Image (tube, rainbow, N blue to C red; front, side, top):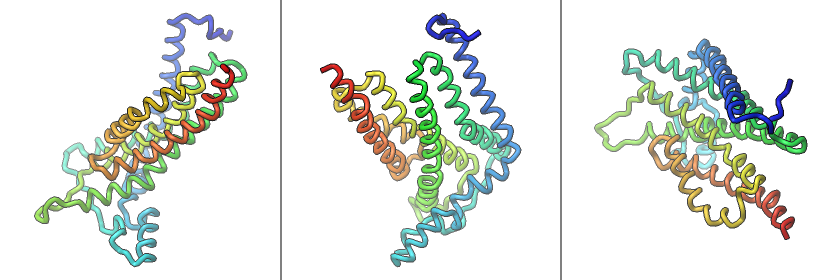
Length: 270
């Protein structure tokens, strides 16, 4: 028998949330086990690929450089060697790859479970819109992951590998550092691309108005830069590559929210 969400007690809501969280964790575990089995393939042909000259982004930039006769803009044309310095480094890396890949691959299930938790409380008219929100959320996460992988990652690798504070120093890239930095940046960018969903949801429920949009914009920009700094390596290039598209998404979301929800509600009040 289906329980009316409006008649559920606080404890029943907590139990329902617990069930959804368990489903999310199980989904991540299953995906992580599968990706652990194919860990070597993921490392060689996914994580390591952006550092190779034949990677699509590196080839496109190289072709553009040849077209413009400006070879200095080519990226990742040198062989970048990754070195393991720790006794358990390769094993820990294998585990990390499985967890990161498991979280990313199971993200549609995770988003679906979050959506399922709120779905019973929605009116029938709202459920159709919520399905669109779910699909948009999954699409934005995938878009963020692809943007980070094909744009931010190769540029970040090129910048750090070729950066030199002294000619007496050579860069040796640590395996665990490389995998963690790239994986965290890709996953974090996918999460940050959920910003439009948050903005539109707040606007739809009247928690975002034209007044607080304008007054809080500066704080939003600061938060975007802080979060971008957390998920990217400590350099201004990577930070801007993440923060700038997130801010563009924010402004687009504000325009859509203002037109679709805020302006409409203001007219109704008048």
